Length: 244
Image (cartoon, rainbow, N blue to C red; front, side, top):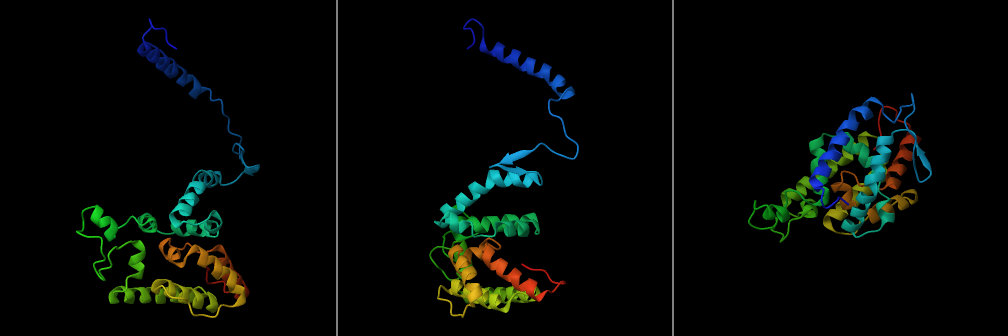
């Protein structure tokens, strides 16, 4: 504690001056030394991170909070959140321009140009959908809007998705299942499709995640579903085409 007869501001000045005086010495004689070809070793839960340290540290710092957010936002469990192929999302997000990443992120959390927020931002008079007049237009309603124009756009988009999946040699069973389950999610009806036995577990995992977020998150797909297609892709070996 500072002496009551010695002003605290003077102590602050002296400490600041001492720090500045030490800075040139510290810069000229650093206490940390680089070992050629080998950075300082960093350990997390008894696992040494020796390569791609930046990615590992970023994941350790942010992954827990991100998954906790999804648990709360989706009212689900960590087990279901862990079913998502997060590495696949990471790869996809890095392959598109930053402005698309921003759009996807805002749409995923529902904070985008929809009635719910446009009214709050004083851009609209009401929160209802301007096409079908549903009382509240949120990000999910954008996909499920029953207005003929919205429905036509939906079916056209799913058709384009099927063309893309066919072009990369996706299993026909997976294509049929994805198309059927997406349409059933959009119309809020039960899917009517025969699922092959080797796909049941993967489809069940995606059911738990929710087919709707597979769209909003620019592919919040289950790792099992993607792995099943990878198995098909390997079996049919088409080197000029990539997978999901």
